[in-house]
Image (cartoon, rainbow, N blue to C red; front, top):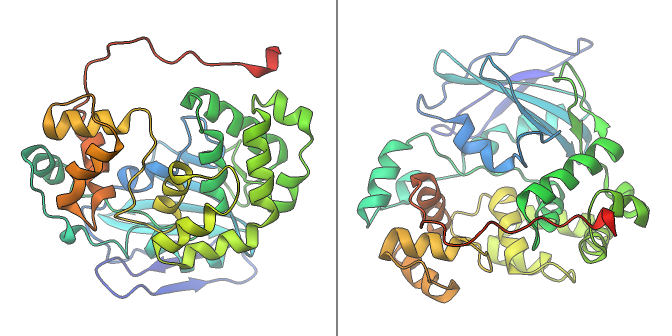
Amino acid sequence: MAGRFTPPTNPTRTTVRGGELPQLPALEGDGPADLDLGLTLGPLRRGPADPTFRTTPDGSVWRASRTPDGPGTLRIRIREGRPAAEAWGPGATWLMDRLPALLGAEDDPAAFVPRHKLLLATHRRRPGLRLTRTGLVLESLIPSVLEQKVTTTEAYGSWRVLVRKYGEPAPGPAPEGMYAIPDARTWTRIPSWEWHRANVDGKRSATIVRAAQVAARLEEAAHMDPPAARKRLELVPGIGPWTSAETIQRSNGAADEVTTGDLHLPGIVGWALAGDRTTDDEAMLDLLAPYAGQRHRAARLILLSGRVPPRRAPRMTPNDIRAL
């Protein structure tokens, strides 16, 4: 299936055309000329070799997802300054219906008022940033759990191993090596030794299994307001404020949900806004208070500014539990 979407500046309406053919020509929409696909969809990518996400030399962004209707592949590109998309697989219609939200149709960049020169400058340099809303919880929750208290290199490696081994090849003409994530039942049936081979300790694997066992209830959070959605996720043992925020930012497009409990973010925000690298979560929230309603966007812009405190200690050493 392929289709056209009405862009964020118009009502979010999608026309999907289908039939016996697996692919139909994509039709351009009247989308915003400044939409930056990389900035908008970048948070959905878990490392440079993420099997669910790919960019190709022609500027296309490919995503393989597990939708309520089954696996689907989505290709998005900018043609003549306008977004165009195609989708394949059982989940194609679901993906096309939610394409506007994925590209920021429900986001309101105009609601953000910079109150610091760094944020003002970054906001002007990054006009194409939109906050994505996937409408899918598990696909963001599981990699967020994998990232708990380990380096991103470790987490990305575990994600690749598990998705490639237990996922489903992406439908349609997706780039080679792309996979949709396993369904919830498959996550619950991964043997303990396979978690070990993927370099995932028992605490994180148990959290993922518990979440997958109540996946239907967690997916409902995508339709809740962000505070209620986070509360729903945190009912699962092993899911705390850090993990719930990282998930809801992506699944719900939550402009105000700030990640707390992060090893680096408070220091980066403190350094950027107050020149204080020792900032803790409480002080970070105080600094972001003027941006109430848009605190997540403010944090994203700070990270995009590149203004980070100089390193004073070695990087965290990756652990490899496979050697145990």
